[in-house]
Amino acid sequence: MSHNINHQIRLAARPVGLPKRSDWQFTEEAVPQPGDGQLLVKVQYLSLDPAMRGWMNEGKSYIPPVGIGEVMRAGAVGRVVASKHPKFAVGDHVVGTFGVQEYALSDGKGVNKVDPKLAPLPVYLGTLGMPGMTAYFGLLDVGELKSGDTVVVSGAAGAVGTVVGQIAKIKGCRVVGIAGGADKCAWIVNDLGFDAAIDYKTDDLKKALREHCPKGIDVYFDNVGGDILDAALTQLARGARIVICGAISQYNNTTPVKGPSNYLSLLVNRASMKGMVVFDYADRYAEAAREMAGWMMAGKLKSREDIVEGLETFPETLLKLFKGENTGKLVLKIAGD
Image (cartoon, rainbow, N blue to C red; front, side, top):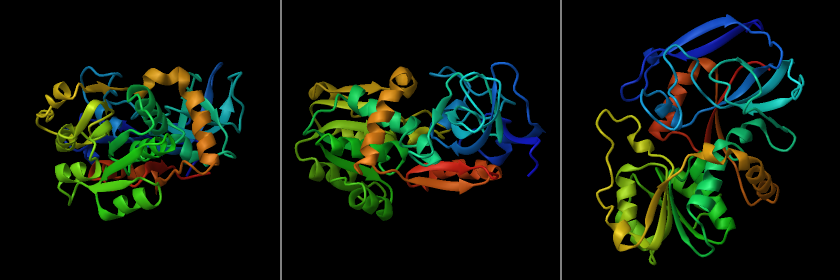
């Protein structure tokens, strides 16, 4: 691997359904040199997130789409290898939106230093990164969590869901996770301390929710949408809060999104359903990260990364998210030091 060539993956076409290899363009160019106020980052780990599927679509959203021909947007952590920026020195480890490439030039906006001695670098893309922040603010702020609540989380073995369940346990709640497959269900109960798990592949969802949430669901944290959201709506407690974080079951549809037919349950139970985007909490990330790092040190919050190697595997590795093949946070390790 040459140190003066930067390999990149760019969006070549807007995907229809699941992204395929031809929707990407593999490019290389000379490694750029920083000008005044810039830093050059050698990317070490890339964050693969369900939200990336939405960023590939044309149309209005909470963030502009990635342009055709642009390096694919992605969060990443890496090392500063050259700097003309007063706040960053060579050797610093940093996290930011560096994109799917080996080297990234940055003006330092939205870039934060991280300490690899406190936690391994991939943790800053998961539990101490965007997914962790999503879980923290989604559950505590949007979900208005109270001790003693019954909390249900879908996508419970994913990057956000694992943290949602563990924070709810830390805060004295009963936690039920919905995940796909016996292994994931066993892991969230035995290792992460969830009170119960429902396997959406084999269990009768409505029946399982009635059984595990006899007093109803106080907070439903939704990462998947579709039929699972509809089932949760049938089991709400009075005053329930539904947090709409994402809807991975719907992201690759070629037909319109399947909305909840049971939404009148919100009326009957005086419940609310509210969407959240983690970027709205950017000015509070540091306080959340401090508290969560404390929980990790105390052994109350565990993290797990599913690490795949090689930039060239990106198109296939991204699809693991949509096939439910990852356990914990999906991360792509970039070859090289």
